[in-house]
Length: 198
Image (cartoon, rainbow, N blue to C red; front, top):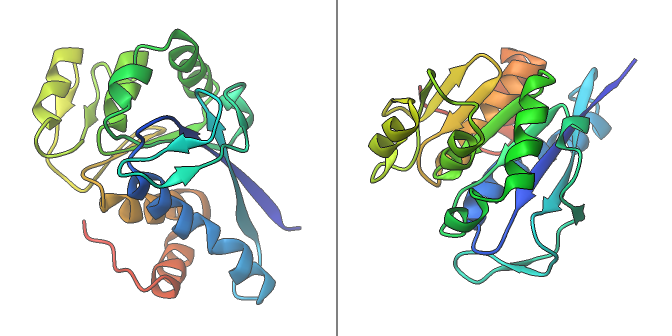
């Protein structure tokens, strides 16, 4: 029987578009690989949830329309939290923080890219853990009781954090590896012509 892995991405004004698009491209390739018979057991379905109504302007200036408003992130198997300048506003949003905590406490895989780690930190789920973020601000994670790590991807239990913008591809491949195994991750990496680095 084929499993569908449900992923939800949080989007907001001034989100960094590649933080979002890098993971989306990796996970979004799996339905096609399934249709072509390359992946037999599982694939991802992804949708976006807007912290505020759309259309939303990314940074820099790409416009996107969320699939639905923010709510019940715990319904997803994987929650994706990108960064960008807009995180400075939304990381204080009590509803978003509560949704992330609920999904984390439900055992869902919580993933951030770049400064999206600060949204996770504000929600309280990174305290006492190792995490990474954009190279110019990663050390500021220590203000939240987080141990900053300068790596492309850091995995701590059911939390995955990625460093700067292009590490979204690495995080996407790591999500595939965690949920579908190393061989599938290698297949997807080859399909999108990207080789992840440790």
